[in-house]
Image (cartoon, rainbow, N blue to C red; front, side, top):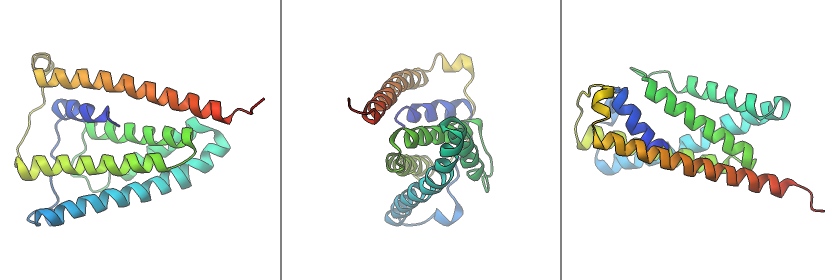
Length: 190
């Protein structure tokens, strides 16, 4: 999930989309807004991981294997996150898809929804914090898509690309170590 932070920034610069704060949240006192975001993150993490990875992915996985289960669950997860959005960018769809694949793979490896639940809740909290930062603190503003020529000359964009590569390699290494640990633990002791 750490690798999705710079990826979100990169995609947000290439495929900008409005990140409106819903009307009912605008004008709330900061403490109320923070409480709302934290509780929403916690509830979404618990409910969505129980529903998608626990009740949807697990039975499909037992019957058809992990790959179809994770892919089908991720498709449904993305579709559920579409309704009510005024505009959906490629970046948003990609991040939601990637997060769902991560949660699904993690649930498969650990045979538990708990690691994904923690990541989901903390990822939502971070996303809410970013929306709040950009909409409330900095104020809403239109952002133009970054052209490829401008991107290769933008130090912040290039830094985000470097962060993405490093964190993606570390993430792949961590998933591999987890898979080796799980596979090694499930083998019968001779």
